[in-house]
Each structure stands twice: as structure tokens, then as C-alpha cells.
Image 1 (cartoon, rainbow, N blue to C red):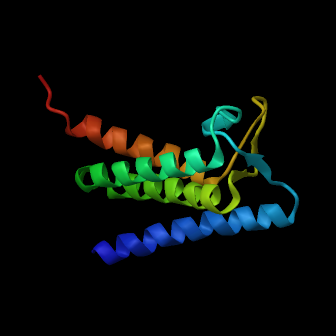
Image 2 (cartoon, helix red, strand yellow; image 1 turned 135 degrees about the vertical axis):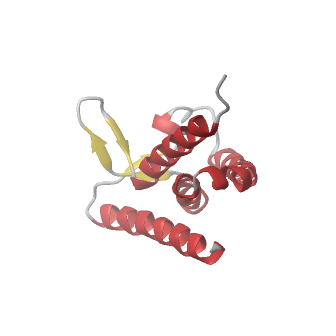
Length: 133
């Protein structure tokens, strides 16, 4: 069972990396040197963001061992998105964003959507399993 999750996780990371590569070839990439939504571009060095992101990913992976029982799909999406953005940070010093969100002026990528959807699925599963009084 664990190997299926690993294959799914790897496939998600590859899907995001391939989409970023294709967007880069088409000239659609916006370089995000900050954290989510471009925050912190002035205050944090690329090395600090990569190390901090790696530590956060390791911490969340440790927590996911329990959380995965609640929603393995949600945790796989979350971790794959975080890992793919971390790959960008380490390799490029920034995250490649290319999906423009109309009306609000933000640009993100598939990994960002994986993170948000994965977190939402996990929180819904957590709320459903919470004891009721």
C-alpha cells in the first residue's frame, strides 16, 4: 500500500514540475522569490527559504504519519505540492508560478493548488473524526 502512495506522490511532483517546465518554455513563468503570495521577497534569502521550507516539510511529513490515516489523499496532495515547490526553491532560488488568478492579480502553480486542496481535505477529515459533545 505504501508503494502506491509513493508512486502517486512522485506522479504529482512530476506533473507539477513538467507543467512548470512547459510554462517556462512558453514564457509564462513569474518568479516568486518570497513565500506564499510573494510575501517576504525582501526579507528572506533564497537559502533561508529553502532550508526553512525543507524543515517545515520534514516536520509536516512527521505529523502526516498520523494525519495520513485520516485522509491519505489530502496528505499526499499537500506533501507533493510542498516538495515540488521546495525543488524549485533549491534548484532555482525561487518558485515558478504560471497560473494567473483573474481579478486578484495573483499567480501560482499546480503545487500551490495541491497544497490548498490537500489541506482542505485533511481538515474536513479531521473535523469529521473529532469527538462530538
